[in-house]
Image (cartoon, rainbow, N blue to C red; front, side):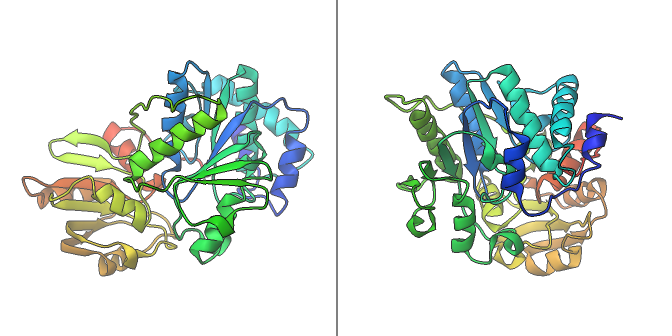
Length: 369
């Protein structure tokens, strides 16, 4: 039985007490310094940008992100290289041994511990750690480091984080502890910040999401390494973020999964008719998705997703279809594709992973972590 198999024997989510369990799991572990990345949208892009900038400074950089598209190994990287199967098995085995006295530990807690173990063993200069959900009770909160960045705030996971932007911002800002600094792309959050945390508002001048993410990353590294100037900004192609999969016809995939991120993805194709292939979790506000598409093809992969009929009712399009899989969705899209149009596949990591697997002829079997 592999370490991944043993990990899957643990509950997906542990009971309350994550912070206390992580403190026990990490006891005696010599963790490396980190910068934590929190937010509703743009976390992964910001984390990848920051890792590339830090490499440009000559640093050895660990990167921990979630979820993954096709392989669990994607979540743990050093200097742009995914952890090998052998190293992942070894670090997960260590993490599972530490978790043995705490069988209620959740999978993400144990995987986060494995990443921290790997970065410590490789003695990286910096670990950039993306928060999974929220902040106050996220396993990544245990990672040492006084700098965190907040990319954006949107209504998401309201049953867990709260039903208002203020409540969600407060939960995410609570990734910080007294003495920490939070660099934020969102302004006006002064009353959401925990006591003793320095809040630096980097929302002005307003920038598009990608440049806002780059600004956050650069300022975080300047603070962390006490640089005299901002580090050089490097472009980076993050898998699943406006990733071009085909030129004829033009097919793109993006992990956008809510109104804010969908608007950002759509804005990349001004004045071009968009054929949207999409699936959305049922906690997403479809009425907030604005604009008129050339063609919408809706899918439903899991029970916790909106039905295709519900999606098609809320999204405006000249043509509408329901598909049962990626192959039929692309067939529908190509059948009504105008000469200057694009096919855009959206709906989160599950949707992006399925599209990538189909286009690459790979097996889609994402492990539920």
